[in-house]
Image (cartoon, rainbow, N blue to C red; front, side, top):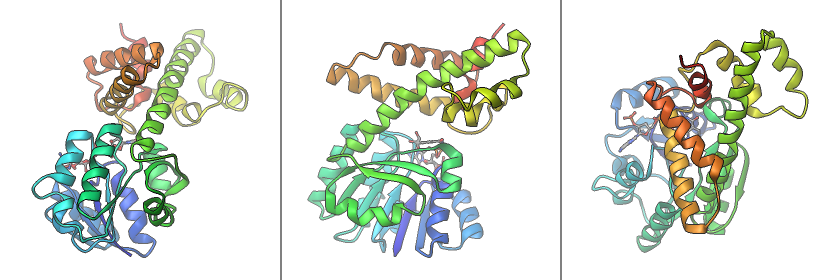
Length: 288
Ligand code: NAP
């Protein structure tokens, strides 16, 4: 299939690579061109200078950029994907963004004869690299049916959860879960260090019991070592929690711990950790 992938960041770069390796014909676009050149050297495929040019021949166009504003720029900007896509093409957006922007893009897609699926992901950098992502989708059933076999290339579990915006709402639920779990693990690591226990031995035992989690399996070593220069950035997590808190103001949900965690992450940003992985919450506890 002819595909386009717009946004070769931590997530998009390996996801686009899986699509090319699965035998699809992928044309990539990245704002910083050197990353796209590097991608073509590594995987083959082609690159274009604008989202519109990358999208021109594609049956399905994938986007994975930062936030609502970035997404609007890449999709509906002057040189955006919608300016180049052929009639009947499908846009699948992997950005973690608001449900409102998903609904807005679906309406614009329909008006121009395109289809749209919001498809934010969970599973982190490792999930993208290993092709083991959870993909939460919103949109029309026929648009999802078209996307699903292609998403299987890097999706471990992919599900349509309702109309456009539902994928983003599901991702908000995911981030609400993650925020509390990471803080719990950060406090556990902090306590374990103070107690003088062997952290690696300790987590190797308790990860098999009721305390076990993806965060414990994948992040306790980084927390013990104070290594945060990888993974899912604190700046992105604050963006995600902001989206969830905004949505909660609309639907009336009470999110007291999520609101607190948003402030804890602001502390990490103030420590210079905006690009650190979210497990750096432990650094906040270890401040002098
Ligand atoms: P990232 O490494 O910062 O990459 C962001 C990508 O978007 C880069 O390719 C960047 O281009 C591009 N971009 C940003 N603003 C743009 C604009 N205005 N116009 C054109 N391109 C633009 O981010 P990431 O970690 O891959 O995350 C991407 C999305 O996935 C975010 O919404 C994030 O919340 C979500 N997500 C991330 C993870 C994770 O573990 N990293 C997990 C799940 C979901 P440049 O190269 O030019 O900067």
